Length: 135
Image 1 (tube, rainbow, N blue to C red):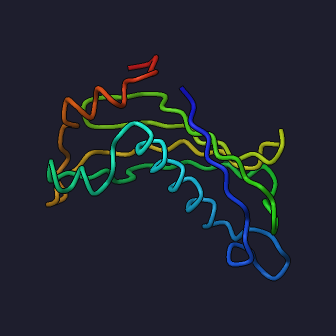
Image 2 (image 1 turned 180 degrees about the vertical axis):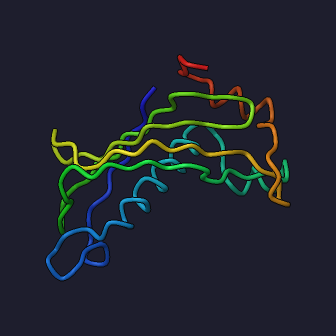
């Protein structure tokens, strides 16, 4: 199952040449991951309040193909590629029209509020597995 989020590139995202600053790609994919979780009924506030847990990025590899520019409509596709009891691996691709601009492999880990790795609660794991092929 792939989730898609769409974002417009605004002036605040770009440098003087109208090209998206490299770190802002991570903001786009962070928002898209949050929306994928939200679509499955999982919120960061709910995780913290109900379970005393949160998700943190533990690994990212990124590849920039061609730059996003001011006023581009960026489509961020997010797909869960692997799910374990403590980690979620995702592939995130940013496109404009059919042109791939950026791709990231992201691993997020479940942690307690003291910073220790923790198991993803069963109800949340079930929601994450909806539409999931590789477990």
